[in-house]
Length: 446
Image (cartoon, rainbow, N blue to C red; front, side, top):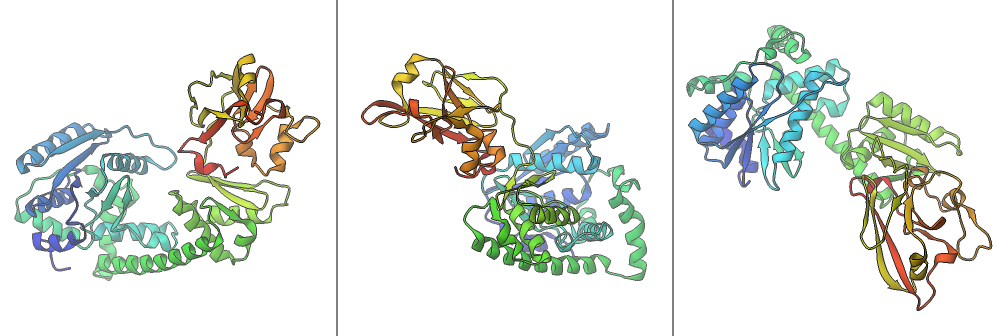
């Protein structure tokens, strides 16, 4: 590392020089102050974003400080306040999630937001993950860039250490905020920074560079295994949310785990912890054929049905418990589930005459429903009809049932009851059911 100045920063920013706008994640601390000053000095199209977590009484003063510094530099500043609720993950992790949700929300297509993570942050991250028993992916540390919202998150200072940024701040007489939480031993990262890393440095100098090299090697290894997994997934089928049990079983245990992690990440979800995934995969592959095992974690769910694995959201919306009247002239929106439309046709769909004879109501399965399909002499249980067609249980529960009067006339746009089917040349109404965009991947094509 040869020191930090505007020229060094220009080289670090070279991959992103053509962006229409660079947001600076500006906390007001030393590192983000240096990042903001260097970006302005370099003449980049800069805007600043300050997130007030509301966790300390001084946070109002910090926001005022950021406004004053941005005004002095001629930089537009956006201040966003968030409410942080600590769950099982802890307050620090909850604050980070809230902060990154704001980052994602402000980014327009093509824009980047830069955070001030540097080499010492990288070293602390890698060391912390080692102590927590991380795998190869975790050892890769903080990525230099990744997608976020409609833009990208970038970290152009990863090649510089904290001391180099502090020297730049002193040279340019910059002012910044010192957050006392950064020195609080209660937080693991602060404990490492204040006590562990200085001690290790007395024995192994250049610790940050050593751990940064480790992160680079791990990132390369992770990239190669991810590339392998994506090739395998491409060969296993066209549906990105379905894998067959037989295909997964062909791989050995280590390969299966890598394959599943990549499969989950491709859908924008975070995989479960390694031990949870390993045990869950055993259950998914070895359960008896008549069982329907599931692996559920905070960010997703894998269910097995009829020899297939389905990747679903962790929670599916519940259908309404009461019927929904529908005059069919306007689309019917079922919150969280989807949209039902009726289109005029000839010789297709439901008989228009039947629709004029009784009110139409949309319901969802309660159990015991029956319907008679074309070519069948008598009605059959709807549960059996859907089972015969391989419709998974979680889909059956969320298909709209169209009743004309007290009779089941249609199941979404999937099944029509014989007495209600439009005859050739007869006026008809075709149904169109579309699952909500946020849920459509939870349901295979029928």
